[in-house]
Length: 509
Image (spheres, rainbow, N blue to C red):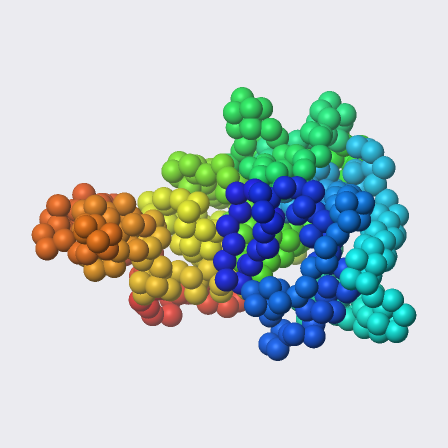
């Protein structure tokens, strides 16, 4: 557990006096030994590592030599596991995708796994000696360990879930390389690691604080000089064309795509579902790149969450409007060129362009509806920030459904702690701050509605420091209210590939 972490009731932690790194590492080695795990297992009643179970499990007194050996083994194992994580772009240890990783030095996962197994065997052997176990007792524990959850050929319930996800998730090889190149295109990952222009930083120590950026990302000092992009588009010839920027990154890394058209289709149709899966863990879904698209994904505008500003969605609106105008102009020109009696092949071309114009028109209408409401705040989390844009992801029905459910919950008041709730419904949220201190804290109104007594307890003020009506008024925008009304009354999205039709008005349509 790195320095600066916070633990909770289901994220328990073990400590040693003075938190000395060698002592922590030696204890870590003991606790992952088959002896310690078998002793814990004997006490397990409900399959949870409760504090009492760990406290009752004996820890042997170690000789100086055994203490040093165990600490060294644990440190090496940590380093090896971290090395395996350097190809995982969601890890704080990420450097480069697997197809490029060997360019920074030897990277042989099979050899690493073999050494880890050898380390585990060495730790087990030292632990048996430290506990004074031999003969039948040792044989019994070794037999248990070979069949225990997590042993080779066995799996815990959590591991089974991960393995199923891994089979469905092609986030290695080419897909991982292309995903990394998307990060390069947005200015998130550092291409210089792949070209040799920058060397990675030295490996940290196990208990160092976690970095704000993985070593594979552009260092903060460099990012300040060249800020990341907030928007990229799916449009050949455009200066911000995602496919062109990804192709350029891959080319510089020595992996130019064989077919730009295939890459463009992959980015338009396959990348976003993969990205959501890659950035989902333990029910938390936090995609970094957001694909806003037409129903058929024939046109997309991509956003980068860590580059958002209040002007991002208005920029999307302006970019989309230009695309609509150009597409409509092209349709008009086609009709003039083909004349009143187009040939069968020309009719197909016209029909495709008409569908594109229709989809683009619906897309930009939804952007116009939601743009005035745009007020991103990362403290609200990905789902809440993304929720008002739910109409703009008709190309990914499961994600749209999840965003719609979050939006409905926002409308119903389930997330009134969120900055977005205050932005959209101050008349509902502000009064609640007078009776719910947690909401008051979330919205920086604690001192207005609450006071701390001599006994250290907080109580509602008999008279707020400022009138509720005044607080609501200064947080209310006529433009936001009009846009919210328009969004709530917008025609419901029907089936048919994402085309919309009016099915009546709903509270959160």
